Image 1 (cartoon, rainbow, N blue to C red):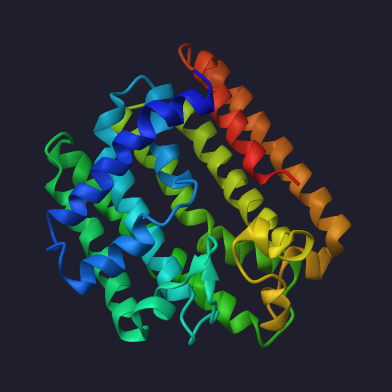
Image 2 (image 1 turned 135 degrees about the vertical axis):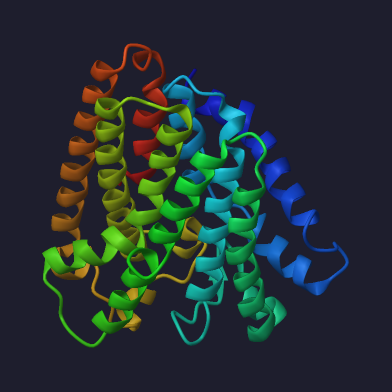
Length: 297
């Protein structure tokens, strides 16, 4: 099964689950529900939940067993985007080609919608009836760490503070290893944990997810300078206006593209080793190879 076939079969089911979990928690007529749904169901590639489900599939697990972990992850990712777009942060008017949450619902409602998505994420994971209690405790702890003050939030803080100083390329990688990479790594870790994958396979896949997270950020930085607004769905050249440290600003566009290609090559090596370490993985590894096409320039 290739990536397109996997998406066609599983992502509509996942989206139904994602929305049903929102309906189960917030009355649909409430403004809070509308604001949460606006961002949660507003498009995007669903890379993080896709990674959870595809990892489960490759490791021989039951794919639907990953819905709760994948939904919790997507709720947290969505909350982070709502807050990232706020005037106090990046002050973005558009995301995915639509007005951002605070432009539609106002800052107060946008903040509360983000807060609600964050807390609902852990409720969804805790309430899952298909994952054992022991696994749920581990998944909740790992997700809190990936999203919290030693993970995504730490990276966001470093990013904000970095606007006032010039970072080295090593420092920039450390920022995004937390800000972008932590949740991407969690996706693969969660899939391996639920499927009870063996250690060699899990190690290689987690190394792949680290390289994918770095490639994703370099690609995102490059989009801001080499694509137009119709292609990105966001205001372009916004990073430069905020004086952000980015891979193109430190390495130049050509250097950033070279770095991106190098990281993708390392990610491909991880996939090759993962396939070798796990007998049933080779036929399913192409999903992950094709995922890398999302981050090529």
